[in-house]
Amino acid sequence: MHAIISDFSKITPQAFGHHLDRRVPDLLGTVETSKAYRSVFAAEAEPSYITAVVKQVLLEVFSYGPHVTEATFIAIGRYPKQEVKFMEKLALHDVAEANHGEMALVDAIQLGLDEHWARERLITPESFAMGAAVRLIATQLGPFAYLGYMYPFAALTPILTQRLQKVLAAKQFPGHAARFVDYHAVADIGHAASLRKLIEEIVEKYPEANTEIDYAFNIFTCVYPLPIWATCVTRAREELGGQAA
Image (tube, rainbow, N blue to C red; front, top):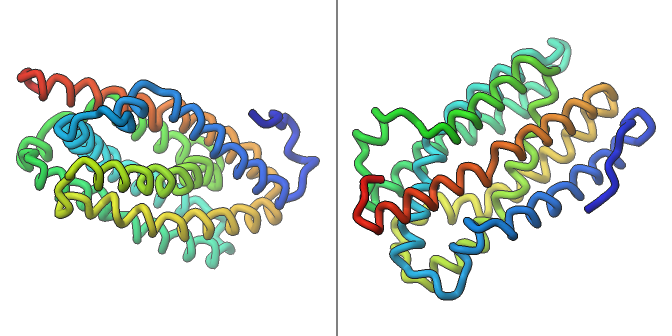
């Protein structure tokens, strides 16, 4: 665990970027010790269990995805209006992510999920909490704070999806239902790198932004990914046990 920084006014934009980089492995370490992670990546995990968990995770992505997209556009809309270049770059990034919830739903349907039920149901409290957190970050903190959830989101995803690819290949997971996983194992590497560069540029011009970006990072780790994964594991086990998911 790296040292906690209490006064960001004394560090350079580059040092702040490195601080965020060090926080991602810390978060990953927490994920790796969780019951949900270990149950999926265990060598003895049954293919049916892996499939059931992935289906539930894809459903959650479909559920919280629109909230992340909308919150991010709200935050970008609050940028100082002279920062058109920042707004354009970050808006294009968000546009590229906008349909990923639908991408996840397509794969989940391939795994047996009922589309009508997925679209009509009330989302889980865990996805509701995640959606509420990103919306409050976008509206109640400074306009740059949202980078505190978007960066760890983008940085963690390719690591986890690359690892999951190996598990799916070993467990005879249907390839036609792995589009979401395969895409994010590659695409988010570039997304994370571009966000990291933009964060340094923003905090160099707006030094006060780094405190809120780090604070938003803290908030985000309270709602993602572990609470969502825990409920996915529970529902997958219920499904396999013959109970209603």
